[in-house]
Length: 111
Length: 110
Figure 1 (spheres, rainbow over the protein chains, first blue to last red):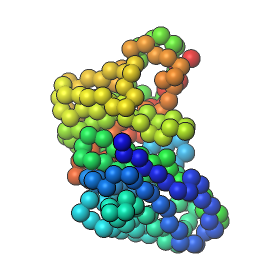
Figure 2: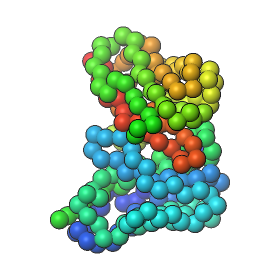
Figure 3: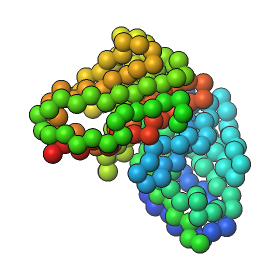
Figure 4: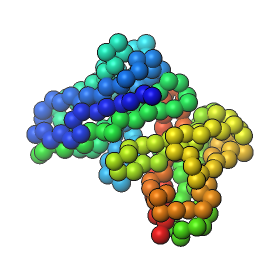
């Protein structure tokens, strides 16, 4: 059974700092990995999708990397802002059958 | 997200009553999913569909049934609601851009 772990569970950093969120998974035969953010009481917003053949994806201040051999992905956020405060979830899939989620990292950016 | 909508957004129902949640997509995606989200458990797959009339169970399917009579609609039914089914329910679709989630339905069973 695929397990997805996100460490730390919570993180607080001052505004303007760069930060890294971690995601690890137990089965390297993934189809893709996706990062989401979720604001309190809201749905999931897709941030980045990395196909299994890719090593990284970038969108604005966000960069996600994927290392299948080690079962790890990182989400790098540059120049953090208070609006980045949210819970960040990574999820892996083996195709279209199932998306397995990590338990998330709750990020707080301190103004 | 504009391509996927859920209804209702909020619902309070009594134990033992049937409840149906609706998911509607405009993306013409083949795959659709129902998840529930609970504190301490994260997001868990209830059922999914891989085409009209084609559905399968997820990891927490007991007490739930689904139907898909059209590509754009995926219905989740709680046959006889219980307090343990109080949760936030999310519908999702998957395609070339990965998974897209609806805004969720907050269901309270009293």
